[in-house]
Amino acid sequence: MKQRFAVLIFLTAVSFTTLTSAQTIPPQFFGMHDFSPYTWPTMENIQFSSWRSAPVSVQWKDLNPSEGQYDFSQLDTWLSDTQQYGQSMLYTVYYTPSWASQCPTCACLKGGRRTDGGCYPPNDVASDGSGTDQHLIDFITALMQHVGPGKIKYLEVWNEPNITLEYEGTMQQLVRMAKDINQTAKKYDPAIKISGPPETGDGPVSKDSVEMNWLTKFFAAGGGQWIDTVGLHGYVNPAEDIVTRVDNTKAAMQQYGQSGKPIFVTEGSWAGGVKFPTKQQPGFSFRQYLLMLSSSVQKFYLMAFFDIGAGNLWDSSSKKMNAAGTAYQLYYGWLVGATMTQPCQAQSSNSPVWSCNFTRSGGYQAEAIWNTAMTWGQTSNITIPSTYTQYRDLYNHVYQIKNHTVPIGYDPIWLEN
Image (cartoon, rainbow, N blue to C red):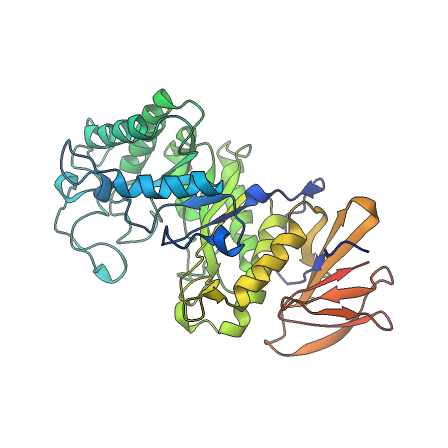
């Protein structure tokens, strides 16, 4: 019996950075957010390798409610789940406690829904980055002493610092905080990795912009020396825009001598919140995974296992996987362990068809293909190589290929020999 795997083909009109060599896709690429420690994704056969803390109630303000006092009980619950189910943890150092904030009653987060000053730097770091930064140093010290070496694999420096109301400090203050997070944490765990501040993209188009001007300024201010991985967020629409955003990240890295560091997309999914059409979610997510793999991203944290406004895989009413969750289970199996022999790219400069190729041992070949010009539900026929005898869709259907022709549309299909 042939192995049940396949390869995708993608086409679009954006630029692409070609891989220099074939890469076998590891399970470590797949990270995730989950907001409930009592409904863990792997309990529902959603496999992933690493969990990110940023949105849940284990932020700096939660763990350090007053000066010199710490409460790690909530963090311990999450650490227990990651250890029990075999995931690493990326802990985001984020959201200053009110008692330590430079503006303890100022509005923060989208819509200014918090007035506790958590988006401001600590009050012992001046705008030029000078000062003791003792509040943050004390917190990182207490955190590392509590968890011990190896329990937290990555410490991320803040969350979306290019967005107003997420971070209201200066670049010099953030670079200073990155330095102190790095130097303090590595005293207790030399193997811990520091993940850089994740920009969401900027420029003339707000949430979907592909430019990375903030990141360039962070590197110019000397921030690169204090991070081990370069972070960004991946909310884009269409999915293919992630390619340009990652390419711009690479350009900034190259300009400032950071090219040897891994790139992590520490948050992302389809853009548009609850207004994003449900039927498009499985296909969008698969396209985004394929495109990030093609652009040398080494880890992606999906937002989220259960979040109706972003990347949702779970139906809380039926207590089962929704269509996007079922699709995730399928393409996770198709991708992990496969070797990407050709990255996803447009078949020609103006073509809406994208494709990429994969192999496995024993002569297995696969290809993924879709059409970016099609709205969901529309298809057009395309001739494919005679190598492929069947294809799979994201709804667990298998079709025999006739006359070397398949229908392609918004959702990628998975061709195989």
